Amino acid sequence: MFFLQGCQSQLPSISFAGHLYNESDSSNGPVPAFLSKVEAANPDVLLWGGDVSDFGALSPSTWVDFEKKRRNKSFLAYGNHDLASPQGYHQNLIDSLLPFQFFELSDSVKLVVFQTVQKVNYQIDTAVFRAEMQAFPIQILIMHHPLFWDGNEPNWKPNAGVGKEPYEIPEGQNFRTTWLPLLQQEAKKGKQIWCLAGDFGKFQLQQHQIQNGIHFFGVGGNGEKLTFLLLKPKKNRYSFQIISHP
Image (cartoon, rainbow, N blue to C red; front, side):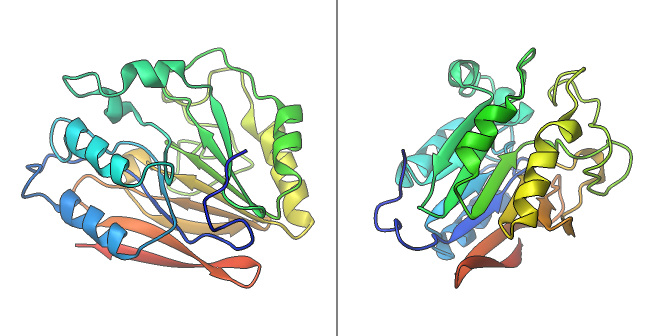
């Protein structure tokens, strides 16, 4: 069980961002300033959708230093570009991680982190999902590429198939017939559910949609404005603000 200290009886404030890498110089590019802006929002929890490190924008050492400052308060769904640095950024760690990790951010908020980059032959265990998630009125899922996206249009399509990228969900797994119905069942009970993705691929768009009571949010990158989502407690639910920089 994991609780943020001091957050057991209240909702923690949460930020989410992804796809930070680009081809800018690490010291003069937009990413360090963007990270400062995220920190200035002073969230209790930082969620990352992957691709935070690459040859250009943010070196692995810079990212590790940033994470150390927020130890136990920063959660990352690794992306393919996190594996692209000469240092083999976190490759051994990524290999050792389970495809799904569950964390309790408070007694009301359950987080699922999808560590599916370069993983194959994993199974979606709906029984585990149900047991881990059903007791929590707020459920947050973070991933790198959107598992609900059909790969053809720049829109969330939770009733469509998944994309064809090799580091997405393995061929033969049908996400929409496994986890999605469970999420929809939970949403019908009045629970607030957020599905957050760190890379919209070639479309490079930030989007927020609400479908069947579920919030879907994804970000782009590669030279466009870096964007993060700030979830702010409002009674027993979250309100949200989308912040862009520069």
